[in-house]
Amino acid sequence: MAQRNVIMLHILEHNIYEFYGSPASLYDKHSSAELLISQKSLNNFFSKQALSGNPLIYKNDYCEIYKDELYVKPTTRGRKKENTID
Image (cartoon, rainbow, N blue to C red; front, side, top):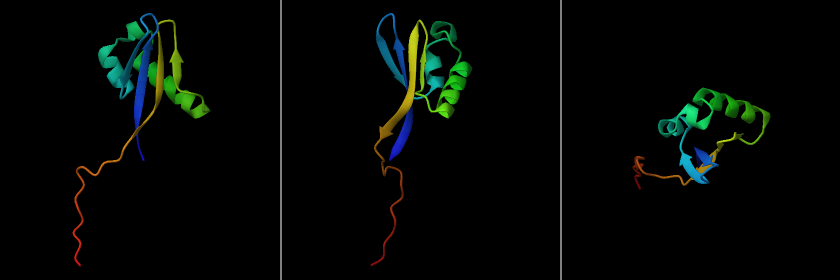
C-alpha cells in the first residue's frame, strides 16, 4: 500500500479548499504573511503534533491547514520484468 502526504488548505473567508503534496508547494502559491505562519513554524507544529499523537491540524483566523496521508494505488510502471526460464 503506497502512501503520500497531502496538505489541505481551507481559506475560511472565501470557503476555498486547495490541496498540495507538501508544505513547500503550499508556500509556492501562498506567502507566510498571507497564511499567518511561516513554513518552518508549520513544519515544527506538525512535527510536535505527530509526536504527541494529535491530529495534524493547524488553525488560525485566516485558514486551517490539515496534513494527512493519501492512499495511492501501487503501480508496476518502470519496473523491469523478471526473465523466467521454463
